[in-house]
Structure formats: C-alpha cells, structure tokens
Amino acid sequence: MVKATIQLIVRTDLAQPLPLRLAMNHGLSNLRAALLLLGVLFILPASASAQGGSISGSVLLPSGAALNERARVVLQTDRGIRSNVYTDNRGRFQFDRLTPDLYEVVIEADGDRFEIAKVSVEVFPGSPVMINVNLKEKKPKGSANAGKVISTGELDTAIPAPAKKEFDRASDASKSGKADDAIAHFRKAIALYPQYVMAHNDLGAELLGQGKLDDAAEELRRAIQLDPKAFNPHLNLGIVFVEKREFSEATVELKTALELQPNSPAARLYHGLALAGSNALDDAERELKTAHELGGPTFAVALFHLGQIYMDKGERVLARKTLQAYLLEAPNDTNAPHARKLLEILR
Image (cartoon, rainbow, N blue to C red; front, side, top):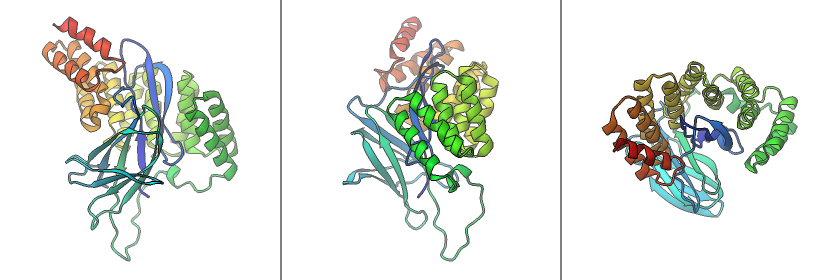
C-alpha cells in the first residue's frame, strides 16, 4: 500500500495566541494529525463544513512533483463506494460533507505506469483532513527492487505487541481528548520499546499541546535521532521553535521537513511564518503563496497572513485584495473578524 502523509493544518496569528493542530501518527497511517490546543503563532482555518468533515489532497508523482494528468479518486467505506471524483491538472481532489467514519481513498492513475494507491483516513466531525499521496511506478516483471532510503519508522517490524497495544491506547485517548491518559500510554509504549519513533513523535505533540515545550522538543529530537527521514517530527519540532519564537531554529527544521515533503502545504505555511518572524518578508510571502496554491481553500489562512505581510511592506492595495480573497474563502474563520478590522484600516 502506498504511504501517505495526513495533516490537519494550523493557522497563525502574529497578534494573539490561538489553537493549533499538529501532525501525529494515529492508527491506519504512519502520519496522522491530531487536534492540540495551545497559545501559539498558528491558528486553524475553519473552512470545513459545519455538518461534517472533509478530505482534500494532492496526488504526487514518485519524484514528488504534482500529477499533471487526470486520475480517478474513489472514496469508499466497508459498505462500498461512497463517491468518486477526478483530479485537476495539478493532481488535487476534495470530498466535502463527510460523516465521521473510516474511509479508504483509492487513486487510479495511468494503469500502465502506476500501481493503484490506497490510503486509509479517519474523518471526525467538522475536521478537514489533508493528504498527499505519492504514486508508485510499476516495476517491469522480474526486475529487482532498487535500493533507496526509506523511513525506518515505516519499516519497523520489531515493535513488540505490548508496546503497540500501549500506542493504540494512547492514540484512542488522544482522539477522545484525554491528553493525560494519552501521555501516560505513550510513555509506557516507549518504556517497552525505546526505539518507537511514532510514539516519541506523538508524545512530543501531546506535550506541545500542554505547553511543555522543552519536554516536547526532547521527544521530537529523539524521534529524529531514530529516524532522520521521518517528516512529522521535523515539522512538529519546527512548530515548537516557532512557539518559543526561536525562528532561526524553526527555519532549519522546516527546511528539512520540506526536503522530505516539498509539496506539503502545511510545511510551506509554517516555514512562511518562521520566515516572517525573522523579518524575511519576501521569502515569507513566497512560502505563504505556495502554501495556498498547494492547499487551496483549506489553507485560506495563508492569505490572511499574506495580507498582514503586505501591510507590513506598505503594499496597501495588495493587502486589501488578499484579505478580501481570504474572507471569500473563509468568511467564518476565527481570523475573519480581525481581517475585517484590517480592511477597515485599509479603506
């Protein structure tokens, strides 16, 4: 099965502390997002339907570039096919108004060139989920497997059953909002198997959610030591540094995350905010634009912060247009009242 990264996106407000969602490793995928609440530079875009969750994503070529041809995307549950759509010319797709359930997303691209990709995704009420799916080329019959660097966390078959059981308990507790229970079970999983990359990452994310930044950083660094190719620990450690306003360190981690997943809109968004914190406004502008281009309306918050950058640069016309575009995409977002106040100033 093709691996996918699943990310719920954070937003940022340079003026006030707001909620954050972080990448975690729950259940059916090696990377999954879980909701955390803390005062931090990021805030979540509220573009999901109030009546259900959504799944949006991008189909990527094996090289990491966006698929530039149509592919069929099938959404199904254990009760059969729920819906199907086709990707646009940048490999993007979206399913809206989904009831909470466990779904399988099936990508059917050019059957002569690519294997069918299948990704399991769990949808929660009102929660947008973003996935990136890398296609895998079909190998000619009889060909040997080519050597390549693979994340050790994805290949670790040595996890003892008791440790996996504790990890699953921690994941269930986290999804139920029982952070203290989740932390306790993650620690038990690590005690049973200290090399448990996903447990270190998810424990770090839970600790970050409680504002224990140094403890979170320690767990995330341990995950990176064990698996330098794991995307989420680099992303989460970058977020820790942004929360601590250590923007240079944040930039280093987020650059590494982007080397691992260059088409991640979440990593682009965070990198843009770290650059803005370092007053590298031109570079921040580029990253925030890219985050929105890659993520679409789910990442409308990138436009909000882009509008603030234009204001800082004295580009009032661009600031006004960008903030207006943000409000068109996310009129009920948490930042919408702030955006309207900024537009009053720009009149």
